[in-house]
Length: 483
Image (cartoon, rainbow, N blue to C red; front, side, top):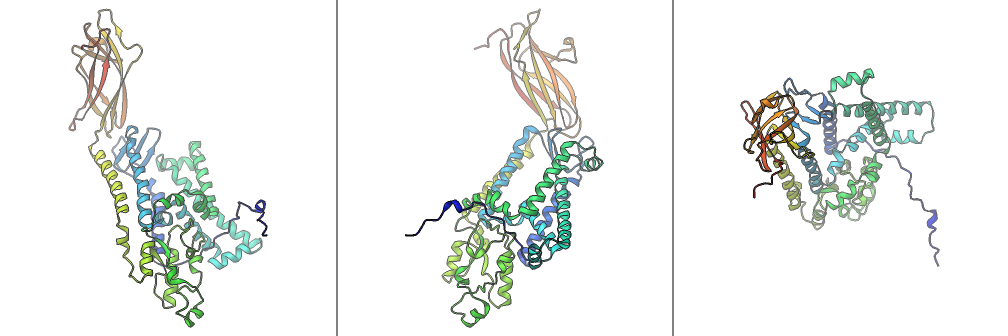
């Protein structure tokens, strides 16, 4: 009788095996180069772009102004009460991930994810300092000595410089970049800036420099979520085992071409993989769909005179059709299917709704808060007074004169803290600074016989664009409202 294994001897911890991926050139590698360059350029250059919004607004093209609760993106300015624009963009980003995954698998992970971009950058630093795959493997196994220590210190110093540039760039999105640059390096910036840079520098250094594929395999939830987004019709990097198996060396396969498949077991697909997986073992959580294995396999197939596509973008359904002898389906035709079109329709619908809301919004706003205690005051002449706090919002980059008027509530007049009751009237005017909100304390008095009722404050911005904002409020009196 077989003895059951001793479960107490099993370990749930597996030591990380470092990945030494080989350099490869090909179509997908060049796409990765282009996307990496674009992502890094956008991230590092954007805070320094200027945008003229007039003399009363910041000139930074993209700015998250937490102090004044504004978000600027080129010609768009988002106020706190318009946070639905930010929420809409986040929803579009999420649905966009679903769309990309449904169409081409984890292409986001393989090309544009920040972890992928910075890991790819650090791997190029490895090749620059330590050499290509074989040289890095020899150096890793070599004992520590002056040469190895020197290489490690140089490489880690470059890691740290890249990480510092990464953490440093982030803070420039939250303040005027040239000003903060001067303050940061002169030691006069806010402590929050230094803490933020230190935190992001440390995380970039550790995650991109040392953990790398472990972030994708163990820490990131997306590989698990994406399994619900893909099916047998999703386009993913696929090893066509019906064509490649059984494997054999080139010499053996040439001697018996009818016995062995096209795969000559050269392991080039494994050598170039940035996460160190073997795509020939089927779909895996470690595959980020970067397609570098396709570049490597296509080169080998070309060199040995066999058709490309042993490893290729394909769907499981299409692979089965190709196995049955049918020609493969064009990739564009595989992408445009009901699920992908549904995601695209929802994504585009949200985008069009945001554009419509952005195009039709007004730049004048009004909010009114009524005093709750006391709800009203009886004056000596029998009239009734209510107090309100108005907040007049000017969302344009220039000062604007606005008229505040009472609509309804017959016989009522109003005045403010900075005026006398003798000057009370049904309208008053104030100039609102550019891109600002002006709080205004307003007292409304109505005749003695006035019953409790609703009325409206109306604000009209003077000038060419006479925008109007309304806010309906309640006027309380001792007399009940008319039935």
